[in-house]
Length: 39
Image (cartoon, helix red, strand yellow):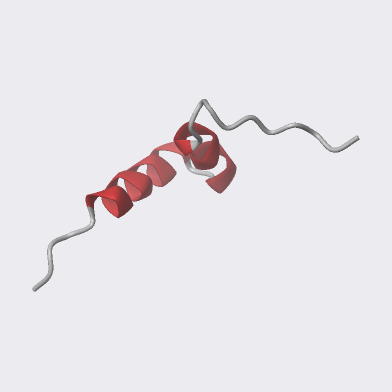
């Protein structure tokens, strides 16, 4: 049996805590990534 991927477990935990994909994405998004809106 292979080792569990703890990154996936953390992502699933955050997704369940946020109850939305958008909320989980905001929480998982690193601070150094800046999303600039299109002009």
